[in-house]
Image (cartoon, rainbow, N blue to C red; front, side, top):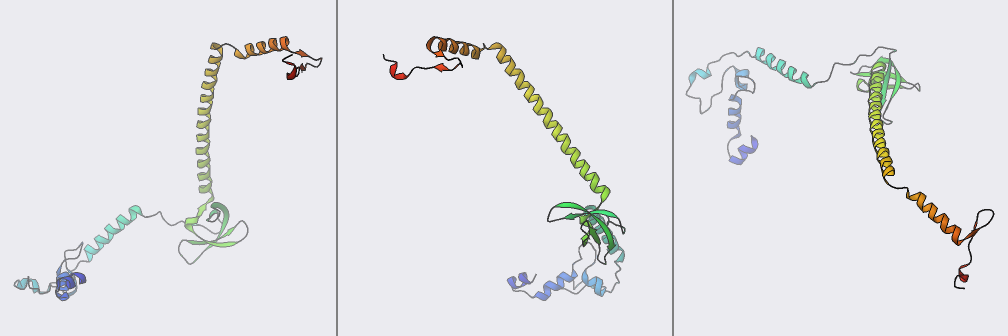
Length: 216
């Protein structure tokens, strides 16, 4: 508003006058009606004399309805109710540095909201917010559900791997049945060649003559 008044070289008081005569968002009344029980005189409404007669405005009911609507919209996305822990209750607290949950015991509630004094497993007394505190039963249930999900996923992966291995073995067996046994033939040919060309010792070692006598 101030920028527009300076940009258009107009009086800021006229802008404020018109602003105070316009109804507030969510109500039928303007700020001038709420404060002075009548509208202010402006160049546009100076001829209508009925406007300037005082008329007391009571908008408490409408304000309450607006507050109820605001609360309803806020409660839709707001968090759950505040957690309450008793003295001596066994809980688990979250360590943000190690990123793990550790067992602890509730000592007392502090004067700050959603804050408790707890004793960890090492005997240290810490102050923690309820966001980082969980009952023992809830933490155990969450862990078991996580482990169950992991085991189910591993079982599915193992079954898939077994099926793949079985299919590969069946294919390899079919190929072996169709193709001739080449390894046996190669071994037999090598043994016949070795028998013809080279002699062997009693221990079974081949006697190979030196290469310099091949041309003789």
